[in-house]
Length: 403
Image (cartoon, rainbow, N blue to C red):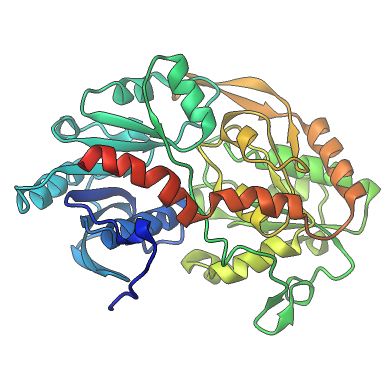
C-alpha cells in the first residue's frame, strides 16, 4: 500500500534506526494490541526498521504484518508464556541485520515478567504500566537497569517513579478520536434498539474477565454489588457488561456472581460471545459506549485503563478509582471514589479496594445528571488523541534516543 504524502512536518520527519516492539500482537483486539498497532504503524511511517515481537496473539510461525507503510516482520510467541526464550533473541537477530544504525526494543507490558538476562544486552524503552499504589520491587529493579529508559503511561507512573528517584519519560496511551466519538447507530439500528435498552438507564462496564485466583483486579464483585444496590431504588436501570461472563477458566463465573446479587437476566446484557472473542469493531464499541449513561471503571488499580478514555471520548462520564492511573483519567464531571488498601502478596505491593457505598453514591450523582452526552468528557478525552500523543510525547522520546 502506498501511503498518501502528508504536509504535516511531524509525519515527514524521518529517523534511521531499528526498533522492535514487544507486546501483544498488533492485530489482536486487546488493549495492548491496539496500542501496539498504533505504535508500529507510526514507527514505520517515520522511517524506522520495525518488527513486532509477540507475547500473545501469534504462535508457531514467523510471518509478516501489514502496515499502511509496508510490511514488517512479526515474530511469534515462544514456548515461555512471556517469550523470554525468544523475544530478546529475535530482537538481537533483527538488529544484527542492520548493524550500522542504532537499535532499541520498546516493551509494552509488565516488565516484571521479563526475566531473561538477554534483556540486559540492548537498549530498552520500557513503556510501563504501574497499577499499584506502591511500586512493586521487581518492577523497580527492572526500571533501574542501565540499559532501560522507563516511559510512564500515566502521570501516576511518573510520580511513583520520581518518588523512588527513577528518571523517566511520559507518553500516555492514545485513542482514535475519529472513531471514538458519540455514535448513535449500529448497522442501521439505533443503539437502544441494538442493545435492547430503550427507556432504560444504562450502567456499563468494559473490563477483561481475567483474574489471579480469588482476586479480581477489575473489582467485578464491588462494582456489581454497587449496581445491585443502586437498582433497588431505580428499577429501570440495566447493566451492560462488555466482557466474557464465563472466561473459560481464566476469570470468574460472572453469572454466578450476578445470581447471588439477585440481578435478573432481563437487567443485564453482554456482547455476542463470538464477536467479543474475535474482536468487535471499534466503531461498534464506540456505539456501545454512547449507549451507556455512565460507566463503572473502579478497580484495584490500573496502569492506564483505556476504556475510561474511550468512554469519555464518546461523551460518557465514568466512575473511577481515586488512585493509580485512573485518578488522572477522569473529566471534571466524572466521579472518583475512595477505597481501602489491600496487600498483593504476589507483587509485594499495595492495591486498593473500591468502597461499595462510595460507588453507589456516585451512581446516584450520575443519575441526577440524567441521560445525554457530556461535552466536558469529550473535550477532556481529546487530549489523548493518538496523533496528538505521538507528536507531543513519542517524537521527542525518539529524537533523544535516535538522534
